[in-house]
Length: 262
Length: 291
Image 1 (cartoon, rainbow over the protein chains, first blue to last red):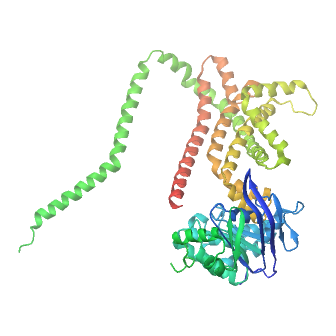
Image 2: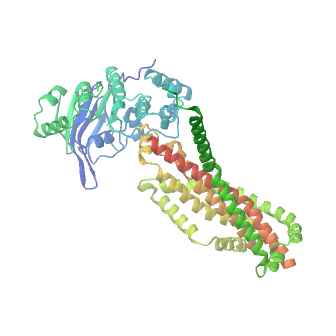
């Protein structure tokens, strides 16, 4: 079976990134380096800029200032083609965004065939391997509306993996799921982390972040206010805002073990 | 302790079963029977009243003359083939041309500004002028220019007018479909490294077109009827053939014959469109329940 692991270690660099929607600033000078095989979790309240940062990294949103590098390449430079960058960086969205008019298999092979130029047969075999590995092989011919939310999100992850990305961005991928469906998706991400996939994860699942992250960044009002090892951020945050945020999370009862034990 | 007496028990159960069956019978067939009866009464009244109404004989001989009907039928049927051919050819061209215009209008970014503006002007212009006016303008006007290389056939220019007008309408239908596909679908496609046009072709358009099939069919019902407009140019199609017959006999039955031909095409199309729309709505509701 093919393991979709990034064997090439690519460093992601985010330097002084600013982004505003109209006159409303969303990112106000973000600096972050993600080393190969690292799993960085972005936490913070809704509207703190987590999703926007991920969308900027995948060039779905243009940035106003700063630069983003992938290895030695400045991907925010004018001459760089967004399509080429997106082939190297995968993203999974909160609402899955599967293509409803295509079978699960075609959802997964579309990118490799149309954008990487792989042969249909090769893309199909690889997609089937992936589906098989994550226990979804029997859903290959189904259309997305026949799948549960959890299955749809897992297919969306496989769709991104089929591109063999060097880095995977996960944008609150469990936020739209019913609680009982979250565990399967998180298990899948743990498996990926174990294979050495470099990931940047925006999440509200604090327990999960705590156990999977090599590093946690707390975003507040468009800035990284605090970053460090998960133990340090979750047990001894230095910033008052971080303490307040975590306090609220605990009160909301969302500090559990990634809900996997629930 | 004696067991409950069987006869009354059996009896009551049987009566319940009968009542139940009766209830079901009423539920299933009752309304149909009522509908049938009321329809019979209404139709009966009409059949009885209409011949009594003033001018009935005149209407009958002038519009519904059996001999006239039979006489004019073959020629009109022959001419109606022209309408069908026009419809099929124009429809094929419109489907493609309108898609091009709609996609032009959906192109983002400042580079494509002129294309977007052209598409908007086109759609505004040709939806804004009466179809018959354009038919006359192009059908009589262009051949009169006697420009070398341009076709002089009235049929060609009549057809071209309909293509221009219906392309404008249908491009708007397509555009509504494209707009109805959520931007996150395009984002998902682009995130896989697909280009703008690839995303349009493989992800956005297939969903858009599926959604607009019913309104598309509606426009084609209109187009089918509007093929009769080229009669003004002297093209021999069904309506023109009918007019020739009417002029010869001063009996209007050939017009009714022509109407019957158009209805034979448009009514099934209308019913089919309605059926598609109902099915669509039901699916969306079912989908809403699942989601």
